[in-house]
Amino acid sequence: MEFTSLAPNGPVLLTPRVHSDERGFFMETFRQNEFETHCGAWLFVQDNHSKSRAGVLRGMHYQLARPQGKLVRVICGRVYDAAVDMRASSPTFGKSFCAVLDDENRRMFWVPPGFAHGFLVLSPEAEFVYKCTDYYAPDDEHCLRFDDPAPGIVWPLPARQLFISDKDRQGLSFDGSPKYA
Image (cartoon, rainbow, N blue to C red; front, side, top):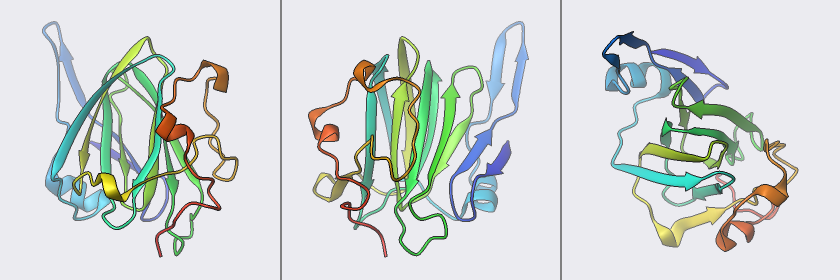
């Protein structure tokens, strides 16, 4: 696995070594000791799997009292993945980090606790899986507005082509969103 840090104590892009032959391929998707060396000593307690159609934008979600780190990947399709640092004490506070994840590049994206996270489906459909460092707590969920200009996310599709839940459309601006200390 190749680990590319995008910021100190921030997101990391993981690129697995894929072993292919006429039968198909094999790749290791997670190894605790390597993950700890490059991303930190986090343990995962919940795995999630979603399937979405083209143009679906999910996010930008985060939990404040029980922040979740997420190790995300796409097993079918292509997504534009985005994370925004919500940690007021961080040197990258308010900065966005983005990556294209798909079933061809097989990259993974580590989104540490303290980041808002979301993704946009670029293919006809996509299956998105992720490991979380804490349990989903619906009473603690917050949503940063996906189109707030402050973090500088440039989504690769125009807003008129996006399918966004009512909950996500009601996300708060970066200035109005609760932050981590």
